[in-house]
Length: 363
Image 1 (cartoon, rainbow, N blue to C red):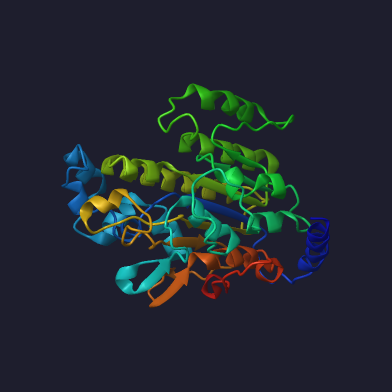
Image 2: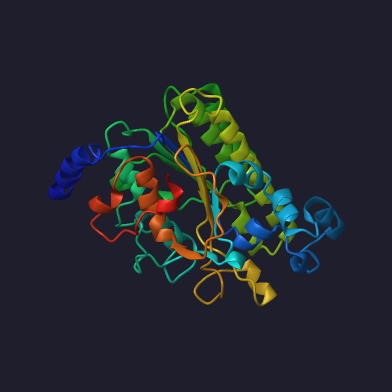
């Protein structure tokens, strides 16, 4: 362990010398758990709307239906298909041959988040149980670099992230489930959220909190502490899909698009973040599509649940919009991409394999 820590310290000094030619100084990462690429790129699915999985069909059609897929996706994700499309990039429209996929063979949450943040589809990470992740993650790596120490933070609805990001080893502040912000200088709003999260209905159980609370925590922490890397992990899209409630699944997706829009607009008004912050949005896994019932599920036995997507917006990302180039990108490449955006080289530092950076994300 002592040798490992010495190596981390020495390499950390080297890593900050890695030249940063871009404008990105800060990073916001958002994940929508289990959000299908189908809805991201085509909007609401008429087959699912007209199925047993949708109550209030007329209401859903009024909110989310158009004969045009381009209009449908904008109705569901207005921020993605206005601001991000015009100023950033979106990857994963398989109908155009642009493929984003998992490398891990399991296609559920813990293995997906492990791949996303370690750049490594480790076959040992094959459970959602509370097992500490032995793999170095890119957030931990960034937190050990000069200028980032204590400036990397995670807020998640699902309670498993302290193990996924191995807080006992990494020392990262990870506020998951109903964990409060205990900073002595926390502002009144953060203190209020600490109390309120226990008073709102526990629709997702006694371990997973509502995405609204996670969003509010992240927003207020951003205002007060100015972290350089903020990760927000939303969960309700996955919960509503597993429950077989397509209306609520769509509603939660639309709501989370609104949260992201609000955050982006807020940082564009803040001199600390304006014009030097990149936003990356993605998911941990996909869902099934055929047979119809498989839309509720994912996993190794569910065809199509390895198919994902991601979007990126920031000062170093070309304004390409929807990527239509036939190519395949894997989630294991996102960790190095995150580091590269900040001028760091996670791949050279990690003791395990790490996927190559996605070069088209950067100018």
